[in-house]
Image 1 (tube, rainbow, N blue to C red):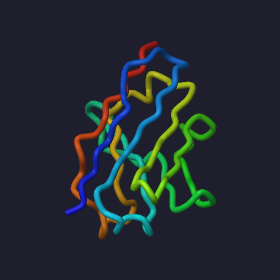
Image 2 (cartoon, rainbow, N blue to C red; image 1 turned 180 degrees about the vertical axis):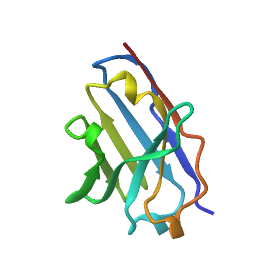
Image 3 (cartoon, helix red, strand yellow; image 1 turned 30 degrees about the horizontal axis):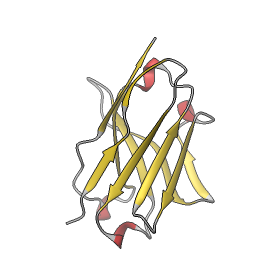
Image 4 (tube, rainbow, N blue to C red; image 1 turned 135 degrees about the vertical axis):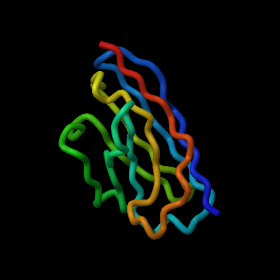
Length: 116
């Protein structure tokens, strides 16, 4: 079973930056789009960014121009570079496949806290 491990979260002031990393345990996800998701307290998990390859990425409107997703299939990793962070970006961030039929069990996520 594929395992997902997210890391890189932390507490930063508004305007700060963080780089999240996700490592998955099997190459089976290399050919599928991967996404970053987040869940804020009291809210449902939402999709934030997705990547199939370097030419095929997409973001929710609220993070466009501030976040950048990338992946390295040789290392089974997906990254999320987050700049100009805002308090509303505060959430637990997760990674997983975009297609539900190939999704692994959700990992523990990594906490991002942005103070105003």
